[in-house]
Amino acid sequence: MADPVAVTLDADPMVPVPYEVVARRALSDDTTSLTLAPAGPRLADARPGQFFMLWAPGVGEIPISLGVAGPGGQVEESIRAVGAVSRALSATPVGGRIGLRGPFGTSWDLDAAVGRHLLLVAGGVGLVPLRPAVLDAVERASDFRGIGVVVGARTPGDLLFQDELTDWGERPGVQVVTTVDHADRAWHGHVGVVTEVLDLVDLDPARTTAMVCGPEVMMRFVAQALDGRGVPLADVQLSLERNMKCAIGHCGHCQIGGGFVCLDGPVVAADRALPLLQVRER
Image 1: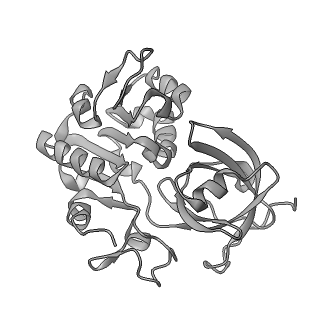
Image 2: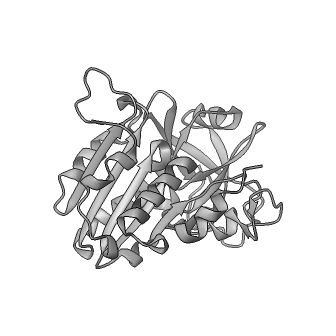
């Protein structure tokens, strides 16, 4: 593998840059984490919440939010195998190569939460885009009045990064609440959707910044629940992901109203995002 020193700041945003899989691990039955290292000049560093376009040669390309950035331009991407492209990416062996374009889009605004309560709410694989923000936040927990992390999953086996969830919950000033839709006999935690456990998190609604990622219906109900609790929708950040193809605003596939998810998102304040979520996905 070539020495990954140069950064391809002037790279054509439509041309994938080769990255090599240097490690892989299973996070659940259908979700795999790939550690990718540049096989030559690397892409610019991504901010938490931004996304890359990942290309499986001969199969296709999909948007995947940044997992965690590592040394030497490495990135960790977690992929749920639900379609042809995601299955091909997930099956890439160590030593195999895939293409990356990016990073693209807007990012989580952690600075907006400084001096306030920070609430991070994830549903399913929505924890992947939120995880780098959580990792950053727990390392600077004193910047916030308190940190709440609420994570929901279909089953206990679908809860991602369980060791990290435990670690975060043991940090001073950090409260972690997990819930599942369907429990097994070994599960002794909460059962139900995330909106049913939001009230367990200690926060001052008027001084709270929230970040939410998951299925659209989940994000809509979480935003509405927080609004009902007194958290201004302008202080609730949602991560949208609709029909992104080119990632640079040219193809129009992700256009909603007068905006483009790939340019104006994926992270958008809920007061702007909720009306857009009423538009049926094409």
